Image (tube, rainbow, N blue to C red):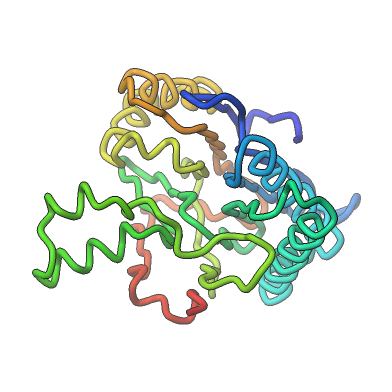
Amino acid sequence: MSRPSERFAAKQLLGQRSNQEDDFGILDGRLSASSELEHTLLVVADGMGGHVAGARASQLVTEFFIDSYQGNISDDLKQIRAGLSSALQLSNSELAKAGQQDPSLKGMGTTLLAAVVSAAGLQWLSVGDSPLWLYRQGKLIRVNADHSMVPVLAELVASGRLTEAEASVDPKRNALRSALMGDELKLIDIAEQPMSLYQGDRLLLASDGVLTLTEQQICEVIIINEHASNEDLAGAILDEVLKQNKTNQDNTTLLIYSIVTEHGVKEANVQEPITVIPVNNRRGQDKQ
């Protein structure tokens, strides 16, 4: 894991678990030694599969994904997308190999969230329920798809087939519809086009342990600490998670990245509103 710079910070909570099964990685660099173009990769993985296997899965995928992507860094939009997709498939294959070589790791898996900040803006790839948010001018918007059962239950509520009360206590609410487990990936969310970024924007990548808080609660903490460093802001959000005193609080990982005025990052006096295609309409981004 890379040492955070002023532009980004990373913090973790163990929660009520006996070991840390989350992992994260940061590839902070340029396209080449002579290039001034920013190209940063942020990765969060939330492992599952037991005391040893979950931690191993998230670590293996994080490290292999970054190593694979690093070998194909490009400023071409299609190449960035292809690089993310290739790194995902190779990482998933490595999980399969590890499980075959060590029976104790059989059944291990992990979510994966990867975000790239380049001259083009923000591009991402995700499998699972680890959230990616964009904070801009007092608004917090989830950018990537949620591959848990939460959106499915929300659709059932919207259609009148389920009440909100029933959905809130559904035992499958947090079950994953897609995760890296070394076999076929059922759902993959990948950005078709980059999202423009502006000075003052903040990106938040997290494991689902942070979802002990609502998006409104997270946004309120950001607004209160808007001028704080990313390190202090990450600490404030995780402190708020702890204040909830949730029984069986999950591991929590949080990465925060600030957009500064650099080559290729847009700066405008009147900033664009945040526009995100609704998850249910992003059929080209979700592999069904």
